[in-house]
Length: 331
Image (cartoon, rainbow, N blue to C red; front, top):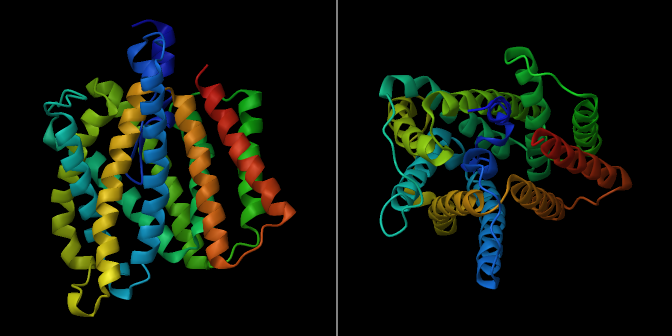
């Protein structure tokens, strides 16, 4: 492998899992030139993007609905186990005939335990952030993962940061701070959880990128090992932190939302993998920004919050900075 590809492999802010999402740049893995698209192929691509956007937005608001129930709000570990199980099932099916979307591999169990612990930790913190914050604050705090990854790569991987990259990251930070300055539904506890969530997520993204290179595996191959092991680890932890709910007093619509959240998580993973396999990281970045705008807009409408000029400027800076950073990272 030449030096250029090695440098590209180090750009791990594109890889990892956030809220059950697989991130990976196809062009860096295969190196294949883009193929001419037919009308049918474009329709399939658009369907994958729409499924990804719909499943992401649906999952966020289903989770928010579920966490309104005080019993389920105190079952974060079991909730994560449910989504990990759905992820395992979807990826296992995707790896089998007639789909054969990737070749499953078995990785060393003991070496996977620390990574799976971090994997479970960041997802649980993300769910807690959604449970204790407004949707708008939760979504904008997630954007802070990008500058956090850059800082970690600088200190731990010795990756230099160009001047234009610093400008992009500064735009992200300023944009998030502008938009969140008047955020509703946020407490000191909620803000602390949100900071912990994007910090742990950033550590995970940097670490998983290194592990993918060490094991020479793709994102879905690694995830298919992580998800079931994470469930196994959390089985021993859940009894100490989760409370056993009384199912009889949980509203039926909440139970239905809990079931649908697993389906949404499965659809999210499948659509994400299809996007990775068929399109570029830039396409994924655009889809991510669309999801962020939709979630923020609906979240603010549901909270009865009016968008101000400062809010709009903050969103433009945050999304613009994240997009610019993504493009610079691909060079």
